[in-house]
Image (cartoon, rainbow, N blue to C red; front, side, top):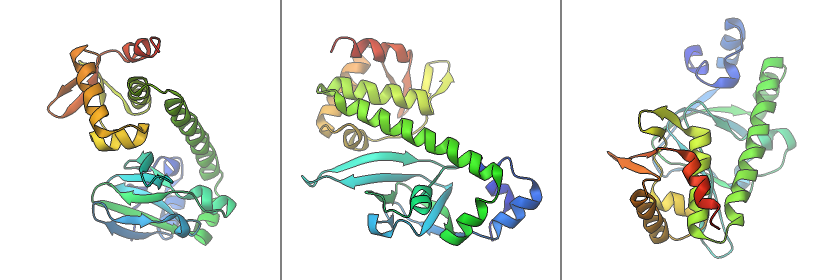
Length: 227
C-alpha cells in the first residue's frame, strides 16, 4: 500500500486534493531494487510507469562500439516511463538502479486512469518539455570536440538543473563518479579525472568532503569561449 504522504513528494501529485491522492495510491505496486540491478531493458518499455520513492536510477544505452552512454539520472521524487505509455513505442535505453531504490510502479491501464485528472495532464506536459530541453542539452555537450569543453558544459548544466546555492557558490548535490561523468560526455574516465584536476587548480570547481562546488558557473562558460 502506497502512503499518500509519499505521493505528495512526487511533484505531479502535489496539486491533487486528498481524495484524489487516496484513489491514486491504490493504483501502485511497490518494488525494491538493489544497486546496479536492472529495472528494465529497452524491450520491456511501454508496460509501466515508474516513480522513485527512494534512491537514484540511471538511464543509458549501449553504443555500437560497445561503450555505455549515460542519457540521464533520475532522483527521488522524479518519474520515468511515461513517454512509452503515451505513444506505445519502446525507448532505446536501459534503466538501472544506481543505488538501493524503492520504486512505485504503475501499469498502463492505471496510468490512463490518472490522465483523467487535469492536474496530472498539465504536470506531465511540463515534464515532457523539460525532457526535451535535457535532450537538447545532451546534444549541446556532444557538439564539442574538445573534452574540457564537453565536461564544462555538462557541469554547467548540472549546476543549472540540480545546483543548490551555498556559501561556496553552487553545490552539486548529485554524486556523480568520474566513470559516470565520462559516460555522459563521451570521453575516457582518465580524461575526466585530468580535466577535473585542472578545473580545481583553476578554482573553477571545488571538491570538499567528496562534494563538488562551483563558485561561479559563469566561469565554466568562460572556459567554453576559448574553444
